[in-house]
Length: 261
Image 1 (cartoon, rainbow, N blue to C red):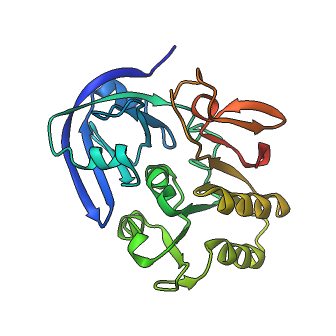
Image 2 (cartoon, rainbow, N blue to C red):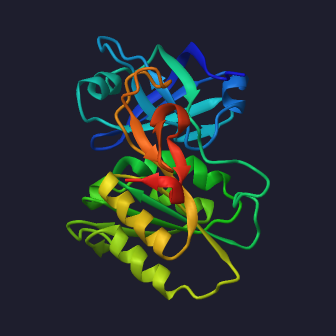
């Protein structure tokens, strides 16, 4: 059964949380909230813009769905200027992280690692809240001004390791350099390590390479340009396990070992 809906919802708030980054909160109905999983997204209708914009679910509290986004063009600029009223949402869309009994969401002897780059942090917070075992978040950004939600992850019980390209906070360089060193030092084979990753393609390529070399399982949320959000336009095609899949419909979350980047 198709659980997505195309409906208009009330805007609770749309505030700038730091320079160029906004958090939009809308009041949804119980059915939509119940059907949302970490990693899924909605297509937002923005006035004066022809195509809807895909934005991942950042958080859900009660019937309030939050979207964290960066102003990068005309569409998100217009969205950031909407202070109240209503907004049309199509969703929830795509396949998120699997909430199943034998997944690491419920496994007690599991080492969970989340890797986020740039705005990829927006889609992994709800995942971090749902994971039973709070592990380590590895988060890379250009500067310290681009690091978001650090206190929120820490309040959930996650250890946070950051890097910035300019060295303004944490390790200077790429977060993948830190991950490679840390994973190489882990020796407890009795504890299963699971990696969840979302961010720029170059970063994800490196993380996937590390995971495959170390035989670490996990999931990656791919970032591709989308037009329809439901698989009809086929503009977000990717290679998964030798087959062509649509990021919007079959993903955006796929198993690490099946992704071909």
